[in-house]
Image (cartoon, rainbow, N blue to C red; front, side, top):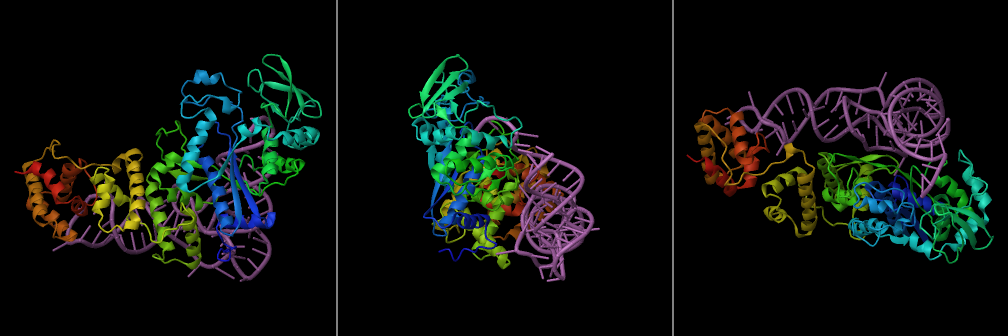
Length: 531
RNA sequence: GGGCCGCUAGCUCAGCAGGUAGAGCAACGCCCUUUUAAGGCGUGGGUCAUUGGUUCGAAUCCAAUGCGGCUCACCA
């Protein structure tokens, strides 16, 4: 199984899989991890981490390895600030410093604030073929699953402090404890740990109320490890072999550096890691995304890119460099690029062997279901042409499909998805120049001189009589003739024709455009200009 | 201050298992028997930031430098 996957020159996901096997040895099961605090919208930059893991998981599985793909929701993290655009900010304000799992969801989408963010992600990931096993840290901490980890951290308090101090400007204080406590009186983490009894008892002070309390870490739901200790504890707990990180973590003195050392206290080893860079957005044009504000999440991207193409964007880009996801005219090029990649995969486009190997792998990894790679290319027609068809049919996707008589049954679903994206793009992001709609028969006719009306009337006559039978070239010649016969400049005739048909001075190449629209539609529009 | 990323055609970027510089857009030209372009074909255009090194050979590897950006040194 693994022999057909080349080691050298392979895709970065394949190289990473090889590295994991090399560094971690031959194992029955490899654990690949990812995770985040659901303290706000999980945006497309966060998605980069998820798909990075997914690609490495697929590469490992294709080498015949068993893989566990875990995704940790850090929903026992603290609610630090109220995001903009959330309903009832005053209510939310009262929950600051409490764990996000205890914050109400003022959108009433889920049972709590953290869960609302989680559910959105969990619902959409299958669309792009990603199926992690979700771990919920609030539930785990509150049910005392990590009691041994917390005790170990307490026992090695000085050692941990020494590790963390290596990179700090201000050393941690003498009385620092490697654990944080949510007050049982207020649920907030405005607390100070005062002492530890050497076993399971912790005494803390609620700094808001000035009250003190002793709790048992075997039974209290209120203790949690701080991030730089929590992360390595979980590596050890789950035996994590691979987990990527953003450049904030994967930098000298960042949390990966300290966790690499702290994990040994928990009897584990650091996973293989890799850094991914951030994602920029281009061409959203100030449109407010579904999540509000200038961020995009996977839902926003899937509005305009099909699932394969969303994957393709990430598969074809080296993770450690920044890139932009475009919502502007670049969208056309992305679709063309993907179609080219597909043509190369199916041998319809000849390129050098080296490039061919690379593109084929990118195509495979871009597919939603790794077990069912398409056996024939999609219905390939330029994206721009689809946009024109959609505008002719006013966004009626089924009519567009019906108008394309050579679509094969196996291509219909993919075409439908693509048309949906194309229409979303036209209506939401396409530049105004790009958009038009056919005039309706009851629209007010454009004011014209007599000879212009006559020219359009001639055109209508020709269309009714010859359009179906003549070639595009013949028809094109006639258009010039109609202008000349009526003493009109070509440019003027084109202009009034576009004005009559779509209400704009310019448009798609006229002869082909009229043929696509068909006799009946053109006739009903031009009849308004009949003498 | 440490670490990292980027610097390739006018613009946006690809190329980075070292082996004759690529794409899209823009420009220019031609074409659809006649100057619409959101069509077709074609052309031009780059000392691959600089300097040095390794090599038969460097955009690609190494080292310094410059410019731009990110990030850590709070929290996570």
